[in-house]
Structures are given as structure tokens and as C-alpha cells.
Length: 523
Ligand code: 1PR
Image (cartoon, rainbow, N blue to C red; front, top):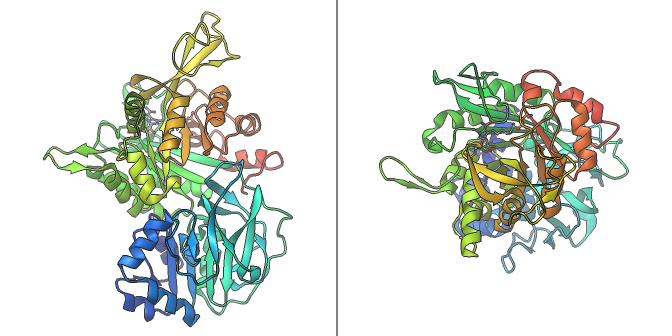
């Protein structure tokens, strides 16, 4: 039996699913006694250092944890579960960590995007049983803005390169902790978990460790989900957001099955967008929660869910906070949530008042679950104008002239699935959402959606230049070359597609094989 420390972090379900998929049973810690009597302990965490230590102190888990660590029994810390072992963190000045390892947690200070999100490799610094069966060139999933800095290197198990080398895991006897997420790192991650769970496994030090590790470009499969007129929940796909064919909702398959197929085909992440979420009440929308629960039981790459995340009042007048909706999605297996229409309304309010709202969905969810857990999904459409100062929005000069030869355009934000244009541009939306705590931008494009004409590179460059958080390119992919184009002509860290995958025109594996000697990808 594995003792499992759940202090309310986002990724708990994913770790339990991964451990149970390896045939082990998990007992969630309910009292300090459960820690002291544990034979093996797993401590996962995502979110913020300060709120984690606050909850551990509140639950009186700090001392039992410190004596468990001193006992030398098997311990696996994941992400914040690693950072908690240190004396403190720049993320929460003055808040004490468990202090098991001398050293601090520092924020990345880089020119590259922060958070560090995606698949990166490991430099192996000492042999360990958790490496048994690994080749050495595998990549693992990271999502963090802070990294540990131990006083002495004796505890360093692996490092990883992201502009600079940082410590990505530690080992002291049976105490092992990783900055990356084994539960979200596909079969390589499951191998590490399996090795940790089996204390009889031989030590190993993989040979094919690369000279320096590289962050891979991510290929994301997107499943736009809605109910058909008969009420069946299906994956659909629009052409410029119109999902109807001969009046009926296009039905491209079952969400859980398609997600599983894309996982097996090598998708780096999977995104579910409940495209009628603006109409539905998410917590009454049990089917989407069930899709997430079932998917997370056997898909071990990051899952993002979007659609309808906002504050709302149900028909009985009961008020729900967006944070409650997000928490339910995290408890059901999501790693990130995506906010669409609500983000536009929040930013409009911000610009009108000149102040941060403080209790907006973006601020509240990023405060509790961390910036990296909040994605902003933007649904813009091009509006051509005669000159750069024709409108008060951020305008770009375009190489794709308008219907009357216009050389300038701006990108108008829409809400409710492209149904309602707003007096706001996509660049400004992205900038203000970053200031409010968002960790990533999902940059769709209504004009390119379902066209197979390729990504709107000008839009992607305009938004990437304006923010320091990662940008996901989306809409218009028609072939593998379009992915090469977006990864070589823009700063996009990842690219998302839907239609070509659903219609089996270009399998994910073919996209990766095409890219493999051109840009860094996870094979
Ligand atoms: O506004 O918070 O309720 O969220 C609703 C979410 O649903 C938003 O993320 C919005 O982007 C999405 N959405 C709403 N209506 C549609 C629609 O298609 N009618 N789909 C929709 C968005 C865009 C991409 C698509 C790419 C790639 N789809 O997700 O997958 O364009 O497509 P392609 O590769 O086939 O070109 P809220």
C-alpha cells in the first residue's frame, strides 16, 4: 500500500491513476499518524509554495513529514513535493519549507518563456534504481516557474538545460524527488514510477544521455466537444467555427476514445474544449467531467479542459465561483484549465477601471493552482484597416492584403464561440491576461480554423512578441510542413491541430517524423 499525501494540489488524480495503472493501491493520508506509519510515501504538488506550506502546517503534517524523511523510508516528491524539501522559496518569502535539504527554491530569471512548460531531457548525475530500463534520451514533462538550488551537489540526481542548467531531481538514500511529472510523462514517466515503487530494482545510469537537453516543441491534439441535437457528446470540428454539416453537428467520434488514440500516436498534450460551455453550467455538465475522469485513467500526458469556466448563478440562485469549477476539473484529472469568453470580459473590465479585479477567475485559479494551470483561449478574427492608426487597437502591418488591398489589420476578440465580436484586440487581451496570472496562451484563429491553409504566422508573432508566457499556435494546420513553418518562423512553443487528426489526414506520428531532424520533438 502506498501512502499518498494529498494537500489539495491539482494533479493528485493523475498521480493516483498512474500508480494504480501499475497495479498498486493507494491510501490517501488523512492524519499525521498515516505519515508516521507509512512504508512508502508519495507527495505530489502543483501550485504555489506558500499555500502548500500553509496547508501542511494547518494539517500538522510538517513534523511527521520531517521525521518520516529522517527515517529514510522510500519517499517520492513530485514538483512542489521536491521544492517542499528545501528551506524556503522566493515564491513565498519568509515561509519555511521542510528544510530536509539545505538550499532554496529560486524563480527562473531567463530570456526564454517562464513557466518552463513542456518535454525536456535529463542529464544523469548519479546512478539510481528509478532509471532502470531507461535509454537516456527520453523526455519528461515539466511545468514550473521555480527551481531548486541545493547548497551542495551531493543530492543532485539529474539536471536539465533550459537556457541554463538547473536541478531537475534529487536523491538521498530512499528519498527521491523530481521537478518533472512522471505521471504525465507517458511510458517513460510510468517506468520511473514503477521503479520507485519496486525497491528491489537494480541501480542504473542510462548511457544515451544527450550532451545538453532541449525543450521539445509540443504537438497538441484538440478535441472540440459538444452534444449533438440528439444529446450525444461527440468530438466535432468547425470550419471557421461552424460545426454544422447539412444542418447537423459534425460527429467525428467519441472524446475518450479519440483522446486515447492520440495518446498512443504520441500527442504531447490533449485539450478538450467544451465549445458550448458558454451556454452550459459546467458543474451540471457531468458528461465533460466524466470524459476527463475516464481519459485520465489511461492517458498519461497533460490534459487541458476549457469551456464555460466562469462565475455563475444556477437556476436555484446558488452562486458558483469559477475557482470551484476549476477545482472540480482538476480533481477529475485536468492539469490545466482554459478560459475563453470570461477572459475577454475580465480584460474589458480591467481596461475600463484601470485596475486588476482581484477576484477574477484568472487571478483566483492562478493564485491557488499556479500560473501554469491557467490557459487563455483566444478566438480572434482579422479586421482589415486602411492605416496603422485607423483604430485604437494594436494594429499590425500584414503581408496578406485585405479585400481592398489593405496593408493593415487588427485581430478582434470574440466570445461565445466566435458568435460575438468585442471591442478588444487579441494582443491586448494576451498582455493583460499575463499580468493577471495566466501561464499560457492558446491562440486560435477563426479565419484559419478548419481551412488547412496553415497557421496565421503574423498573428502568432504579434502575440508572442507581446508576452513572455508560452504561446500555443492553433487553427489551420493542413500538413506536417505547416508545423515546421510555425516552429521556424514564430516563437510558438507548441502547435495544436484538430481536423487533420480527426480526419486521419496526417497522423501525429507523421508530423513528428517529418519534424524530427528539423526541430526538437519528443519521439
Ligand atoms: O468561451 O470559455 O466558454 O470556451 C469555449 C471554448 O471553446 C474556447 O476555447 C473556444 O476556442 C472553443 N470554441 C467555441 N466554439 C468553437 C467552435 O469551433 N464553434 N472551438 C470553439 C475552437 C478552435 C480550436 C481548433 C483549432 C484547430 N476551436 O480549438 O481546434 O482551430 O482546428 P484545425 O486544426 O482543424 O484548424 P469559453
